[in-house]
Amino acid sequence: MRKTPRQERSREMVERIIDAGRTVLARDGYARFATTRVADAAGISPGSLYQYFRDKEELLTVLMERYWAEAGDRVAASLADHLADPPERLIPNVIEALLSALEQDSQLLRVVIEEVPPSYHEDHLHHIRRRIQDLGSAYLAGRAPEERNGTTRAWVLVAAMEALSVRWILDRPAIRRDELIEELTALVTNYMFREDPA
View (tube, rainbow, N blue to C red):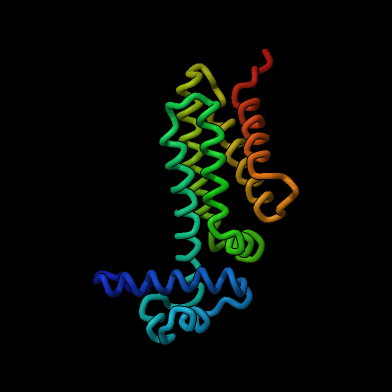
């Protein structure tokens, strides 16, 4: 950001701009995302916006960082809170947290996934995946210390759960939420605790 907000009033202004930016991005899409639209949605002048953000690229970068950090925090917190739980409680709770995090704004999710160039958010998304994978690896190590490929399994699980959850939210197939959670729980459980061939 061009200017780091230090006073409460400045911090409130930045939050107002970010909230307006999310609204405009979800409503108008990436192609029509512009600082003038964001300023209008925030009820401020473009000049006020430019005090904090150099251009729409900088604003979009901050939006993507914030978007994925919030989603990642919800899922990581749920996983961390349940690391001591048995799989039959941990897995559906984490899947529920993932779905809830991604569903917070399904229209914004669609724009982020389908329109925003990966260069704006791939680093942020990679960092969040890494956090969740590390927690998953820790869980697998705690359940089966002799397991050699816990890191590999955690990577596969995070990638699969992310892809399936995003597609369910965006495609809206004729599958109820509780059915999806049940199926994903079975998928994860069978994969996590399968017997490796000798």
